[in-house]
Amino acid sequence: MASSHSAVRVMGLSKAFKGQPALQNVSMTVAAGEMVALVGASGSGKSTLLRNLNGLQQADKGSVEIFGNVLQLEGELHSKARQIRSHVGFIFQQFNLVNRLTALENVLVGNLSQVSMLRSLVHNFTKSEKVRALAALERVGILNQAHKRASALSGGQQQRVAIARCLMQGAKIILADEPIASLDPDSARKVMELLTSLNAEQGITVVTSLHQVQVVQRYFKRSIALRQGVVCFDGFTVDLDADRLNSIYGSAVEELVMRGHSEMFAS
Ligand SMILES: Nc1ncnc2c1ncn2[C@@H]1O[C@H](COP(=O)(O)OP(=O)(O)OP(=O)(O)O)[C@@H](O)[C@H]1O
Image (tube, helix red, strand yellow):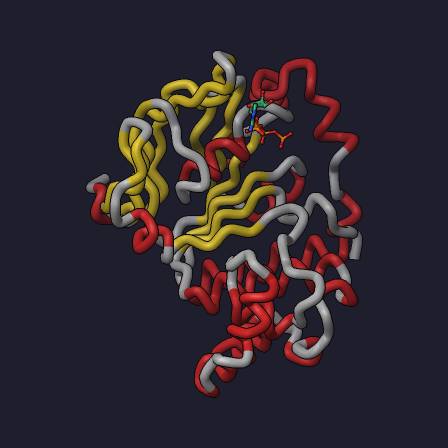
């Protein structure tokens, strides 16, 4: 596939921590509008790969392109990395909101980090920015929580604020690192349904690391599996049968059972 049609293109990406390889010659392409699950045992490299896809981390070798623009190449971030990253939203297992700010303020300030600066910024947002932030909260179904502090929201609501922040940012790609791992089954289902509808209705490309194989099978047509930093499967999720899962997870296959969310689909 031509890189200009790819949302994400990774070529020969390798990354080591203190000499220990975390990613080894990883190559993959995600088309614009695709929704892809990243699976693999704990420590297989999923978070490292996601962080490299938006330049939060730099690899030692290889390249990452976003919509055909080089984000990083051979360990160097491109000089326009900031601009390229503006299309890429990131959500984390632990939501990464500023607890003292309201849901609306969190959506407005995005990922900026200094709270005192954030406070003053909040008061400088224009009416149209506030209207956009409220629309983003409405899109994720929590407009009625807009003025509550993040710390007073449930985990599922906090994760939806984090997704609203991506919408406010205008993200065309959402990278999600275990977005449901800290959620109860009902909240997890709502977050997965929200990501699925953003993908289907707004064409947002979604790449999500997940441990729950039932969730992967339910929501993702395509999966990419890592084992010890190497891509060991890239294909249709329906082809992830018991033998393949055993080979991907090795002795860690019990993680799938222990960390499953089968209750998500009970109702
Ligand atoms: N900042 C870091 N410093 C040192 N080693 C790291 C760092 N980040 C990751 N690693 C190592 O790189 C390897 C891959 O880790 P990574 O977090 O990417 O795996 P993962 O598949 O996301 O795991 P999990 O499912 O438990 O989140 C592991 O061996 C991990 O210990």
